[in-house]
Amino acid sequence: MSLFSIEDEPYYASAARRRVLQIIFAIVFFILLGRLIQLQYLYKEEYGKKSFENSIRTITKIPLRGIIFDRNKKIIVENRPSYTVVVAPIDFRDSTIGLLSKILKLTEKEISTKINKGKKYSVFFPVRLKRDIDFATLSLFEEYKKELPGIEIQIESKRNYPTIATASHLLGYNKEISERQLKKLGEYYEPGDIVGATGLEEKYENALRGEKGFEFIAQNARGQMIGSFEDALHDVEPKTGSELHLAIDIDVQILAESLFANYRGAMVAIDTRDGGIISIVSKPDFSLTNFSGVTSPEFLRDLIFNEEKPLFNRALQTRYPPGSTFKMILAVAAIEDKIINEDWRIQCKGGYRFGNRTFLDEHVHGSTNLIEAIQRSCNVYFYQLMLKVGLDRWNSYAQKFGFSDSTGVDLFLENPGLIPSTEYYNRVYGKRGWTEGFLLSLGIGQGEVGVSPIQLAQFMAMIANKGFAYEPHVASFAKNPKTNKIDTIKTKKKKIFISEKTWQLVREGMRRAVMEPGGTGRASQVPGIISAGKTGTAQNPHGKSHAWFVGFAPLDEPKIAICVLVENVGYGGAYAAPIAGLVMEKYLYGEIIRYSPNAKLKSIGGN
Image 1: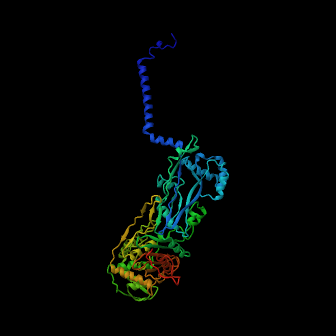
Image 2: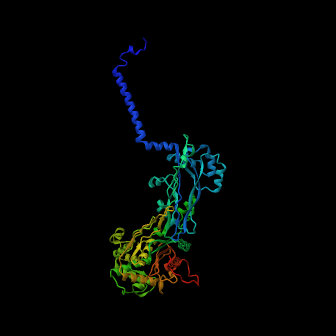
C-alpha cells in the first residue's frame, strides 16, 4: 500500500468531516450566487452606469441663451461666438504647462489650481482654463497644436448688445457659477457654467438658459477618446433658451438714457394699461459689454469703488424724500375722509409759524384752495392740512397706495421705503422725544419719509387709472423658439376705492400744474396732449436739492405714467419736468416732434 493511502487513515473521510466540507462549500456557493444576483438585478442600474462612465465619456454641449426683444420685437440682447481653452484633467500633461502658461498669459500656479479643482469634480469633465481668448491666442494654439495634446478650443457664446442703450441695471449680466451657487441651484449646473447674476438675466435664468445637450464618446482603458459611441445614436442636441419679450421700448430707453448723460438719478415709465415698464433708467451705470466674456479685475475694482456708485440701482433701491410729489397722498386723505372740502382755503404769506419756528414756502400764494395748492405747490397749505389729517391717517393712505412695500416688479433688490407712523416715532425718539412739528415736514414730503422712483411711478399709474394699477413688470412673455409656445408673465392688479369726487379734485390740480399758468410742471408739457403732473424739490443736507417730477398722459385716456429723479441739481420743475415731457412725447408720438416746426400732430393710438 502507498504511504499516503487514504485507506490507512479511515478517519480522514469520515461522514462528519464530509458534512462540514459540504456545508462550507454550500455557504460559499450561495454567497457567490447571492452576490451575482445582487450585481445583476438589484444594483444593475447603478453599476451599469459606472461601467458606462468608465467606457463612455460624456461631453456636455452648452445651449445658446435666449435672445431678448423689446416690445416692438427689436433685438436688445443676442449671442456671439466666443472661444474657450479647455482640457479634461485626465488628458492634461504636466510637461505642457510651461508652454500653456506663456500662450494663455496665466501663471503655472493658476493653471494647476484650475486643473486640481476640476479633478475634485471629475477627471473626465473639461476644465475651462481661459474664456473668450482673442484671435492672436487662437492662432498660437493652432501653431502649437501638436505640442499641446489634450488641450482643446471649445466654441461657446457670450452676450452681445446691438443697440446703443446701456440698460445695465435692467438687463443684468452673467458670470461663471460659484461653488455656493453650485450647491444652491441644483443638478443642472456644473463647474464653469455661466449663470445670470443680476437683472433680467438672473430673474429669468431658468427660461433663458435652455437645456444642455450631450455627446457620448467611446474611450479606452486609459481614458483616450477613440470615436463616437454607436454612431452618435444616443447623443442629445442642446435646446436654445426661450426668447424673452419685454415691455421695454428700446427707442424710448435710448432717449431717456441720453437725457441723463450729465446727471445722476433715475427714471421709470410705466404703461398704465397693463403695468409694462416702458423704460427704466439709473445713472450712472456701466457697460454690460465689459461683463460679456472675461471681465478684468481692474474694471471690477474701479466699478466697486467708484464714488458715484454705478452699481447702485437708483430706480429701485433709492430711498429719498419725495418732496411735493407726495402732497397728493395728503390731499386724497383729507378729501376722502371729509377732513376738509374743496372750498377750504388758507392764506399763504410765504411761511407758517408753528411753535417757535417758521416753516417757509417758496412763494407768497395768498388765498389758496386744494386745487390751487397742488397747481402752485403751496407748502403753507399742506403744512396746515397735515395737522388736520394727522400722522396715522396720512400713514394709512400712503400704505394703501403701496408705499412702505415693494411694488413686485420682476427685478431684484427693491427697497420698500419708509413711511413714518406714531409707532415708528415712539420707537426711534421715545413718546416724548417728538412733537407735531415733525408732521409739518412730512406734509410736504420731507423728513424721514423715503420712497423710490418705481413706487412713485406706480402711484401715478393708480391716479391715472383712478384707483387701480397692474403690478409693474419688465418682461411680457417668454417664447420657445422651436415650438413657439408662449408663457405669459402673470401680473397682479392692485385696486383701492376712492370716490370719484376725490379723483376729480386731485387730477384737476395736477392738470393745472402742467397745463395752466402758474403751474410748477409746465416744462413737462407734451405738444398737442393734455397731461397731468406734479413737481417736487426734496431738500438734501449734503448739497443741492433733489429734483422730482411725477405725471401721466394723456389725461383722459392715460397710456404712460412716469417718475423722474435728478439728484443734487435744484428744482423739479427746472430739471426733472423737461426730461419727463420728452420721454412721454417720444413714447406717445414715436418721435420728438416739438423741434420740427412743420410737423403735424399724429395719432397717439398706436403705442
